Image (cartoon, rainbow, N blue to C red; front, side, top):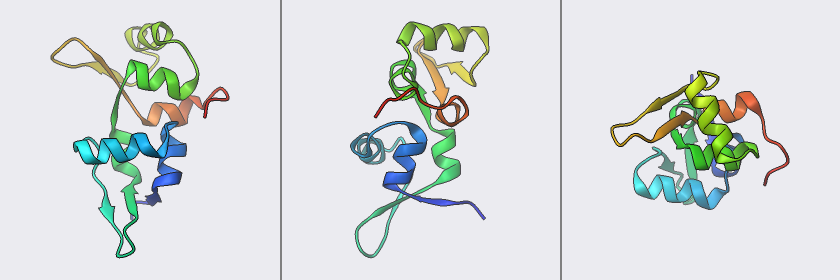
Amino acid sequence: MTETLTLTRAAQRAGVHRRTLRAWIRDGRLPAHLTPGGHYRVNADDLAALPMTTSEFARAVGVCQRTAVRWAKSGKLEASLDESGTWRIAASEVGRLGTRGTS
């Protein structure tokens, strides 16, 4: 069975603020469900598969965007180019690399 995360825990795993996750949920980027009490819950697998931009990823792990792009191009990260030529990095990479004191 897949782990279900609170918004706070999901934000910690993704290295972003809870408000960022709420925006992604409203935009349809991240599937979530509401509890009877009105709180979001996120499937851990959905979070891990969430594609982040290099800017979002860089902010989450505490590196500059150029470093994130370089890592994506070199194959160090699970990443792909989308149809517009933008690198998308799997959110699971944040958990794999950890953060460098970002909030």
